[in-house]
Amino acid sequence: MNQVKSSGGFGRGAPVEDPVVIRQAMQDLFQQEVEFPIKVEGTHTLPYTARVQHVDAAKGLLHLKLIRPLPHELAAGAGFEMLFSLGDQRFEAPSVFQGRHDYLLYKFTIPTRMAPSDRRRHKRYPFRPREKAYVIAQDGGLPGHGISGPLVNLSLGGLAFRVDRVMRLDDHMRVTPGLGFFDRGKGLPMLKIRDLPNLPLFEARGVLANVWERDGEFVIGVQFGELKDSELREIQRVLDIRENMQRASSVAPSSPPRDTSPRSPAESKGPAARVAPAGSRTPDALKRLGRRTTRLILAMDPGPDRDQIRHHLQGTGFLRLESMDTLDLALAAFRADRNPACPLLMLESQSEHAPSLTGIQALQKDLGETRELPVALIHRGEAPPDSEDPLIRPVPWPSEDISTWLPQLDELVGLE
Image 1 (cartoon, rainbow, N blue to C red):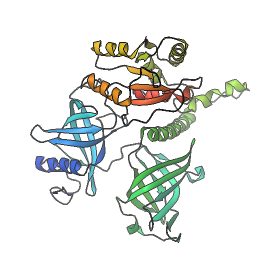
Image 2: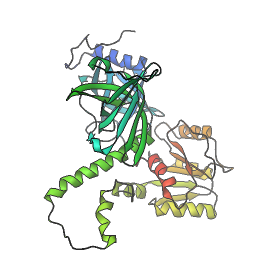
Image 3: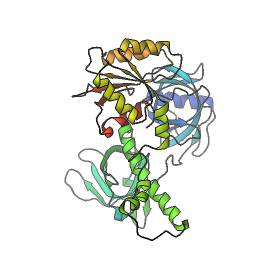
């Protein structure tokens, strides 16, 4: 395989515009099945994880397989940024969205330019030693090493921590490492962060991205491996807390003197509620608006159960709610609707009218190449088997505790 190398057709730090070199780089990404992030150009939204499924050099197109769908309303011509690694160097490259090719498969232009990139993709939040957040990592199985130390900073893309201890896993002997011990690109198949705010333990995989020496100690930077949506949400909640703390501390010095007169306990709880991370007590304004404008179809037999679910959904802000007595009626409504954005479909998984997971996937393809149908399968007891399809999610029977089912609905309609 003829791979592009950083020491070949371009020097470190020099942009690449040679179409032959760029197309070879895209072939390398395809052949190595590399997963990499892409994001809408100029935005701060979470990136989409992509993999090159086909390189159409004749048409100048890439077919990228994503693990979650792009927004239905995204029009052809939207600019995207790709960020990927080749050899020991990272690149960012602009690409233009050309439309949907198949389910979770999208067409993009082959980049015309690749620029070396070492810039940070996500805001990093510092942690102090007194906060007790601690990192434990392993660089492999026996006879690998365990590396541990206090967390220095954290972002959606990775972390940095100060190395307090390096230990051989086979005999538990301590090792005194040098800079050469920390090879850039070394995999960390086990990575744990303990005692984050409201998150006692977070587990992931990572890659050693860089290392530097500071005051006689080593600090290493780690890039997270592919994170699940639930793991991203866990980290995002921690970072929301940090962001609110930073905002509160930056506003405090310039604020007018506070009224120090006694207040009632109820009044004294006001500021704490505002500092809490978004969504932990009440949905933020954008989520409320998103629920009000989301069309939701509940395919379920008439009766008290359906009335109960309608009551819960409307109470949490889903106001464009339609009830259909059967799944066939709901499907007929979908096919007659010319709107490219499909509504959210909810149905009971144990119902005699409910299709199998295979049947739902067939239904999604039957709706056409440009329409992707999110489905929530309501279950009363044991959850149905997991589907690899990110648009099919089991949700527990709604109860008074909305935390058991509302996040899944928000995720399916793109509000998470």
